[in-house]
Image (cartoon, rainbow, N blue to C red; front, top):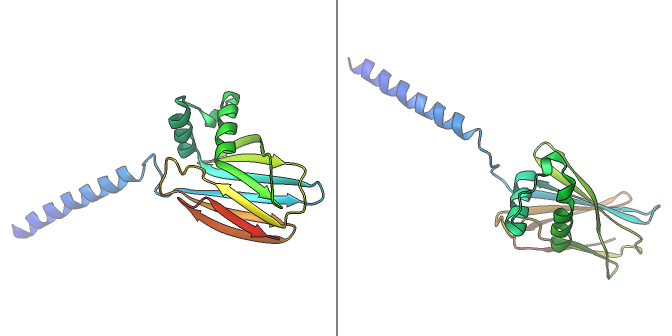
Length: 172
């Protein structure tokens, strides 16, 4: 009789654990907040190409909180571009060789859970020192970390910014 009671409790406990694990595996939120930025100097074209990757749900939430408008990035809605352009230029910038650059958002695309924003600046002088200001998603996610990779020809330099850190610099 005691073993049947133990067996019944064990079965119920196992079912509860399975239900909890199953229900939490379909969370809408992801457990980490990481962005990635790549900056590539194209020495032949004298352009700087930048890509910034952020989780789409976090970016949409940030845009909504700022502009009080639901912006659907997943359906490549062109009405999102002005909001995205404004958000990017207010929270991301480059200084190359001591000169501020004007970054132009040339588009974005969704890949799985991420939004890739594509920016370009032209022309540029030889980089020397590159200073990056990046506080993408910092306003809304205290846990946000942004990794920065900067490439010139075959040289790669990387830096990790954790909220509230906003500046990184590289010398080529």
